[in-house]
Structures are given as C-alpha cells and as structure tokens.
Length: 105
Image: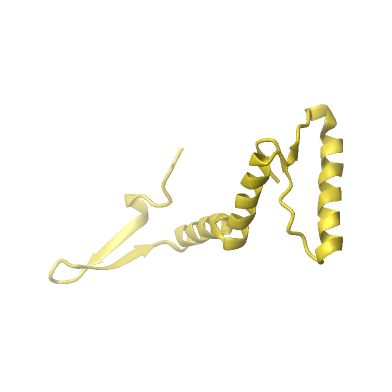
C-alpha cells in the first residue's frame, strides 16, 4: 500500500544556476489526486465537524446512546430519525449528535 501522495518519480525539482531549488513540477493528474485527497479529508477538520465529534464524545461519556445488535438495526435507525426529526422541528436545523456505542453518527 502506498502511504504517500507523491514519490520521487512524481516530482521534478528545478534548480537555478546557483543550485537553489526554484520550482517543483508535478503532473496535472498528480495535482488532481492531491486536491481530491485534501478536499476529502479537510471536511473532518472543519470547525463544524470537530464540534460535532466533541459533542459525540460527550454524549458517549454521559451515556446518551443505545446499544444495538445487527438484527435490531432498523430500531436504531428509527431512533436516530426520531432524534434528528425532533432537532429539525425544534430548531429549524439539526444540531443533534446522537451516537451508538463506540460509533459516531
């Protein structure tokens, strides 16, 4: 598995006459891959998501979750929809961070 976005074969470094690095060139395809990677993971570091993750941790610590077995997943989804629906109806937008044990929703 490749854990880096770029390796030596992907990059061309351009030096000036004094041997100082002046430019780094990569292919447009590599640029698009890097941009997609950044966009995909930047979401998790947004303030909104970080606040919801913090709230989820607080909910777990306070015992605000339900335990569900795989056979009861419909029950859990119903519970989640009720929580979200109540939050939408009450505030006009969802701020609920309902969680299952060990899993953020």
